[in-house]
Length: 161
Image (cartoon, rainbow, N blue to C red; front, side, top):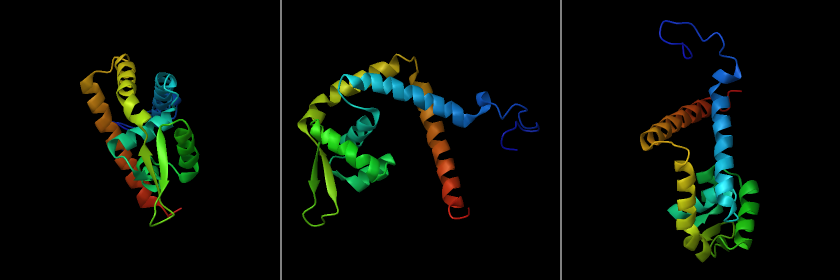
């Protein structure tokens, strides 16, 4: 059985908040949001805006659609965020000359100039949480594996409801 040790029955108190994996992840995500929001405040950035910058630092000049797919954000969320980032000098939007439906997002000099300071601030704040490198790597692998399993389950059951 999935939620039991081999040869044992399911946890008797599985249906309590303390034993819900979804709640533990929800709480950890909330704490990460607070940590990152506080760290990014001095740059005038929100956590989702930081994610946009991370994606563009990896590959500048993505379309809004590509950015949305990479960050798992819809255009209804992404477009106003990008407009705010453009107004604040972080990114620039440029409509394709060959396909007006495509809008490319590129980094402005401010985003390139502030990159190192942002990375240092985030790195210092995460390190101050006393997460060892090995623990970090292990958590990343486990969460990526969990994501794959959940995505696979959701993909396999789409349209069956």
